[in-house]
Length: 301
Image (cartoon, rainbow, N blue to C red; front, side, top):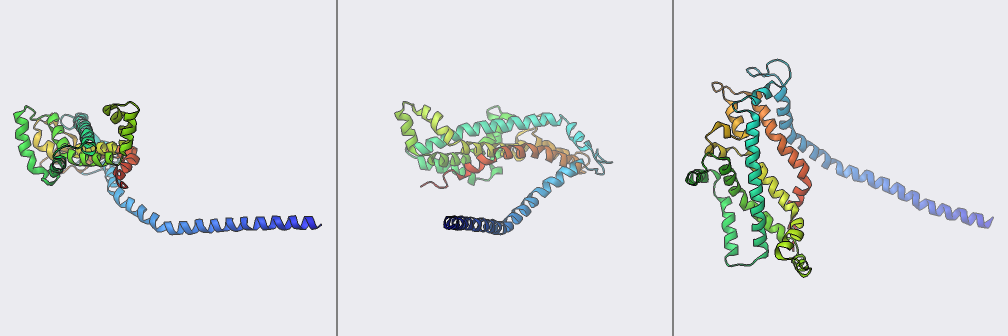
C-alpha cells in the first residue's frame, strides 16, 4: 500500500505542473491575442482605406453611367468602348508592355553591373561619380524632357517607343544603382574570395555567387522600373506623336474627353482597372522578394 500511495502522489505531482502549464499557456495566448487586437484592427482599417478606391473603380467600371456605352444594367459596355478606341486597347497594351519590359531589362542590366562596380572596385573619382549619378534625382523630371526630345530627334529616335524606354531607363538608373550598390555591400567579401579560391573567375563569382545573393535587390529594382514605366504618362505625351504608338495611360487620358470635352467616366474607370491589374499581380507575386530587397544592407555593419 505504501508503494501505491507514493506512486499515486508522484503521478499527482507530475500532472499538477502539466495542468498549470496548460492553463498558463492558454492564458498567455488569450493575453497575446488581446494585445494584438488593436494592431489587427488598425491594419485592417488601413487596408480598407487603401483598397476602397480600387474596389469602387472596379465596381463602377461595370455599372451603368449616363452618356456612356453602358447606360442600362451591369455589363462590359465600358470595356467595349475601351477596346474599340482608335487603334484598340490591345495595341496600346502591347506598346506599354514593350516600353515597360525594355526599360526593366535595361535598368536591371545597367544597375546590376553599376552597383557591382561601385561596391566592389576602387577607382579614382568613384564617390564623385556616384554622387553625380544620384544628382539626376535632384533635377525636376519635366525640365529634362524637352532637351531629351531634341536629342532623340538628332539620333533618329523621335516618335519611337525605344526612345521612350531609354528616357524612362535614364530616370530609373540613379535609384536602381544606389539600391544595387547597398545590396552588393551587404554581401560579405569573403564569398568572393572563397569562390576565387575554388577556381572561379571574377565573372564566375559574380554569376554563381553574388547574383543569387542580390536577387531580392534585383527583384525590387525590376519591379520599380516596370511600375514606373507602365504608369508613366508625361514622357509618352511629350515624345510620342503617332496615335498608334501611344501607351495605355496616354490612350486612356485621350479617351477620357474624346466627345466635346465630356468625360467618359465609365471608359476611364475601365482603363484604370486594366492599368492596375498587371501592377497588382506583379506586386503580389514578388512581394516577399520586394520586402527583402528593401531590407538589403539595413543590418550591415
